[in-house]
Amino acid sequence: MMKRHYDSDLTRKIIAEKAARLFSQKGFAGTSVSDISKEAGFSKGHVYYHFENKEKLFVYLAQEGMREWGEKWTALSPNYPSATEKLYAMAKFVLNNYKTPLLKVGQELAVNPSTNPETVKQLYGLAIIPMQAYAAIFQLGMDTCEFKIDDLESTTFLFGTWLGALCQHIFTMDYDKLLLMFHQSVTIFLGGILKN
Image 1 (cartoon, one colour):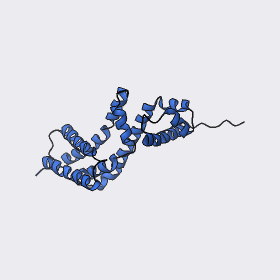
Image 2 (cartoon, helix red, strand yellow):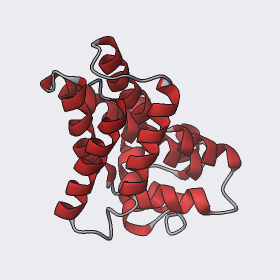
Image 3 (cartoon, one colour):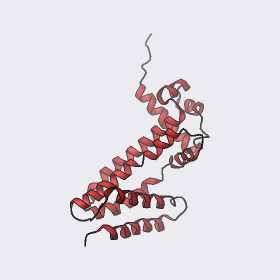
Image 4 (tube, one colour):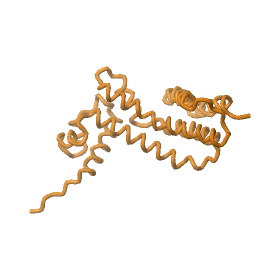
């Protein structure tokens, strides 16, 4: 009798894909480990073996999503030679890549008082990827003498906060109007850092 080969990586991938779909459809609270187990075709034990609990499974999905965001930007970035062009491209990129199916689930988890504080910390920690991308653009502008920036960390934080505030309107505002605002925010921001 042949023993069935168990592929741990494939199992993890299937569980993650099915969980992402369920979280997107039913939210975090509305999705149980039993639902994920049934949908993925593996026992609850498999789910717990690979992810320990539902929160850790969601954090994994959020981290994967952010990693893909970073890879997409890294592939796109060389199309824009100057730091100024990269900044405008980044604003549009953020607008077009912010609204993911899991976004609302992450927000649901972050504001729930029963969520493990470590989970909330990990979700907020995902901002490091876009912040590093913004900082790289500002650093390029400084290196090429395009930008005059005295404090790279503060400038990066301000820019990220500004885009983040605009992102809050993605679900409620007309896309074209919001796109114009993202563009305008870069124009105003550049007014403070462009070398004359």
